[in-house]
Image 1 (cartoon, rainbow, N blue to C red):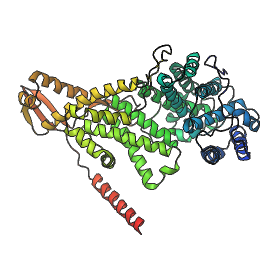
Image 2 (cartoon, one colour):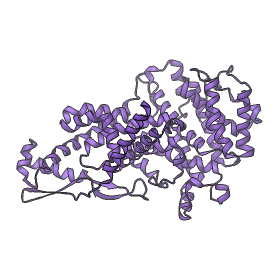
Image 3 (cartoon, one colour):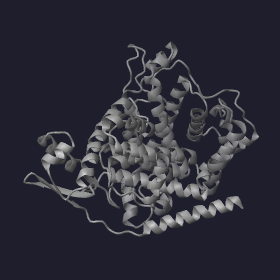
Image 4 (cartoon, rainbow, N blue to C red):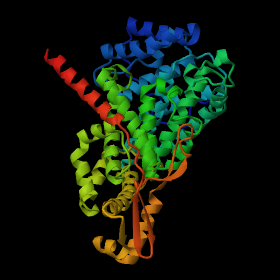
Length: 527
């Protein structure tokens, strides 16, 4: 495998502080993890070592800011110098550095070289004896995309870089290049054969949660290869979302049944929440508002139930899940204001209104000129950290380019919001009448008759949306109207009839049950 994809560098290794603590518990951890991954291959041992022991040792010995795990060289004797395993160890150590420390330019380049070596091992498929769990595979892909995102912002903020950093970045322009990041994610998906394997399992009625590649004889090199390719699908979807290509973001998810509760990603909490956040955001930006509401509602309700049971604080990534939940609530507030009449689950509606009820009222009551800033603030708070994918001109002005992509996406969203704000105003009038002349309603909106006809056509067009159904690919769906009223124009008159409403009583009873639980909980706390 290739060990470099960047070109010459000033520093040979930025791995870690040579004085990092290498004590017996750390040595034992590395030895046991290597033994579990390469020899015994016992799932429960890996779950405990990766899911618990790693965090415990980090908290005990490397919790201070700037503390780093030992270099690969310092612990290589514990794993017999296993180069493939050491790539996984270094990935974990770099992940800790990016989470708690302040990575230097050298660290960023070294982290890239390690990912290149690790993924080349997987893609070449010459060593298939590495064993890991789903959480670990998901964490590697998630961190890979996160570090790419972080490095894009780092290299495009030239105003904060000194001369040595600029020189190093200029000499290593291949490191964290967008096309290379996309290449490795695509290759992981290809070599794992994830699409055909998932189709084969669906045809046999087997859930991917219960998959065991070696026992089932599936057409994939190994379980680890499959898991890295499987979670690379979500990494690629997230990457496309960060680049602003929302159709491509949804298209990548075609092999996955995103509405099924039996998919493998449900075993990894952080993957589940990230998937629905980025998928919901992509739906929002392509104006599939009902699908966006469904996606966000799914996770908001799920996290609420986990909070109520106390389970959220015990799952890996629970704190990040809470942050994603806050962003989804902000996006739901936008959607509720932009799409009046679209049905939202009562529990989710109450959760969102508890956080953003006042802002929703402001968005619904004012014209766009008065609410534009509020829309913009909510969107910027809740949107992904978009990236500028191109390499900056290091010989040009030393300024900050990193916010250019955010401003572009904000502008695109505000155009949507302006159109939908007009919908809310017109809908409020249509709800009052069964028939009204075009001229009269045009006067209410202070525009000409011809312009108002154009607005009516625009509303029909915008609210005729593709809506996904269970079992469909994320990008697929059937065209349906998202309006809760039906209107048509005939002989200069607008005729209005409400869509049929289905009487549903379960929401009332569920609301009363929730209130009873809250009262009971308060009484227990007082006792």
